[in-house]
Amino acid sequence: MSLETKTKEILADFNGASSADILDLLNQIQSSFKSQITRDYLKGKLDSVSSAVDEEEKKKICKNLKPYLDWYLQGL
Image (cartoon, rainbow, N blue to C red):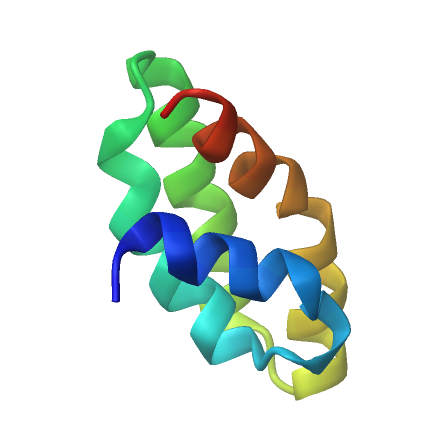
C-alpha cells in the first residue's frame, strides 16, 4: 500500500486509527517535508508521543500532528 493511500485511510478514520499506526506513518513521511526545521520539529513531536505513557495521551498528541498528514497529501 502506498503512503498516499495509508495517509488517506488514516485521515478518513483518524479516531479509529491507533497511535502506533499514526506514528509509523508520520515517521515514513517525515523525510518528504522540504524544510529541515519542519522535519526536526516533527521528529521532536514524534519522540514526545513515543515517551507518552498511555494511549489516550498519545492520541491527544497525535491529533495535534494531524496537519502534517494534510500537508503531505497537498505536497504530492
